[in-house]
Image 1 (cartoon, rainbow, N blue to C red):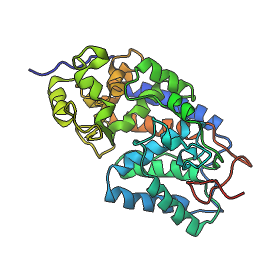
Image 2 (tube, rainbow, N blue to C red; image 1 turned 90 degrees about the vertical axis):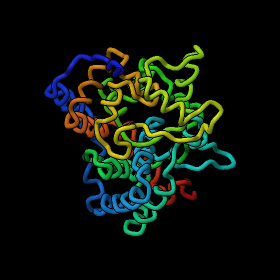
Image 3 (tube, rainbow, N blue to C red; image 1 turned 180 degrees about the vertical axis):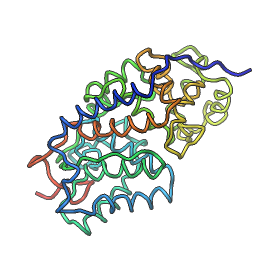
Length: 336
């Protein structure tokens, strides 16, 4: 017997594209301090240099595409896109990497180091680490088969990280409900459509058992599994993440095409095969379910909207002009 799919209202491609166009108009209006031609004279090859390093990293490990994209998200959601997530902790300052939302979760810092080294070799002291993250995210998605977008540039780097509490309060957890997730996205200027579209980034990448194990055995303290999980999928997950097993064992976020950036994430959700509660919640909320269903049936509309939402992400409170600095090493602030 097949497991019944969630039913959602159908939304036309024309509507999705129209909403995306409206969103980008606002994003571009707000992004006047950033420009796609910012390095046209000072470092014209920067995008190619970044892409070359990202390509090597993704060829060595397909998962790295998701890791680099996630670094950009976690940077921008806390104090804006300022490269602060890359700063190592010091004897006097606790870095963002140590926050529970990031610790043992964010990765790819060594790849960013390699990108920075390559960029410094051709354009010393010119390109910010925040801009490197934005360019790397675009390169990672396209190399995984996803869409490309116009990356606006001109960000500068923070000279101090956000606090651990600020990080943990800004980043939704894998077990957050959709009402909370929508509110967290709204706090940084992203609307419901952005929330649904950007959740589609989980079409690539992996998650640790600890991120979803409560759904498998003791959902909401009931002592039973989350009833929304497809029972066949549930057995697969319980086998991979047994009680008392390795909490750091990994599972693919997209069971269908785990390394390809496509719309399978949304089709999986329609079959109740979302790995994280925060993913499956998209089909339970009346604000998000119609959009998730529409993207499940139209990859072109998803790709179009994803690029436009990424422009908005990249313009969350950037440091520009004389603010901040251009870090020479993405892990530490410049010597005073």
